[in-house]
Length: 212
Image: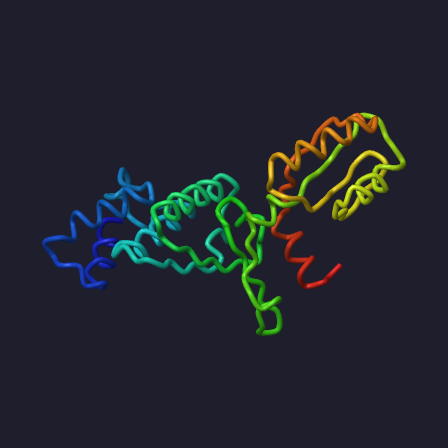
């Protein structure tokens, strides 16, 4: 592994005197410092992926482009990779990841661009975290057939509702949310839970492209 990282460092123009320190830093950042003397051909798929990312970041780029980084990895290796990418993101590196497996991106994705037929759907990136924080799920302990009617009469944007659950678009304002809960309780609704909805990336994708 050391030779692979050294080659990548030198290829990116790192001076010979600085290369050993740069190699060890990259190995530490991707969690393989204790495996530096291992041969690349003897590594597991997950470790080879870490090595490849180490080679890509050895010169400390501001932007890292990744194409299907979790392809072929087992569940534990995918989780480890997700943790690694979160760490790189938190150091200030911008990650641009291309993937068809959207569930793999949910831990570290903050924006998503959907490309369909060569065009960006909607013309701009989707702010994933902002969308998640504006959707709330209401659950009642006892079913009420007038739940949707009550919410709509209160001016709520009801996405979907049945007699015991409702999904609404709502404000970030804490006081406004507290008032809605209070109004529901005062109207006799037994509110069992009121929580932000975590909308999966696949749901966002299908909502934008309009596929069933």
